[in-house]
Length: 239
Image (cartoon, rainbow, N blue to C red):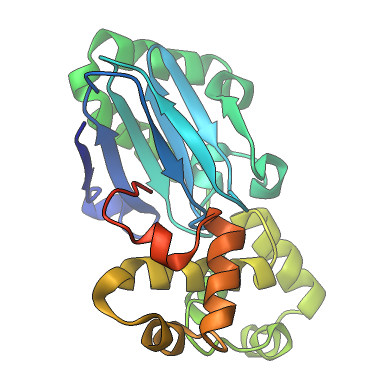
């Protein structure tokens, strides 16, 4: 079973993290999915599914002989793929026809007919959405500032952007799917995931903005259900 990721076209790079896919598995399997602040549109076996922002880990089943393809929006860009406030789909996975009606059905049918074109068709859907939707510039600034080992307070960030603290919290929740505190935790966890086995846990804690190694371990248990040691074990598959 081969998992791959590819960069989107230049037009989408500020909005889309990647296009991705799983090759057809020879036998049934599963994949651990952990929070990353992103949302996805996923095609599998005749259905396009919208995956909302996660606050905890879940296991995705993989059917034997069935490829899976997806497109992933960056944190703060959820409406590009969902069309509704991201908080409405927190920890949910829904058929795209519930969000997009006939457009969702047409997308699923198009990929069914030519699954080898799935990445291009998903990308085309996202490009069409860019003509209909404007990202929130305050959220883009906030997400970039909060993705830091020493993030600013929400009050300081709101003052820097020029909005009220309450308004900033609401706009982040609409665009990301949860508030600033959870977002900071998820982005910090993802920094640790990317650094992986390159560092000791004590060093990883310091580099990624955790108070200490115990803080790192608590976050890993809460967001992945695993200890850092188990998460980074060679036989542990996660995305």
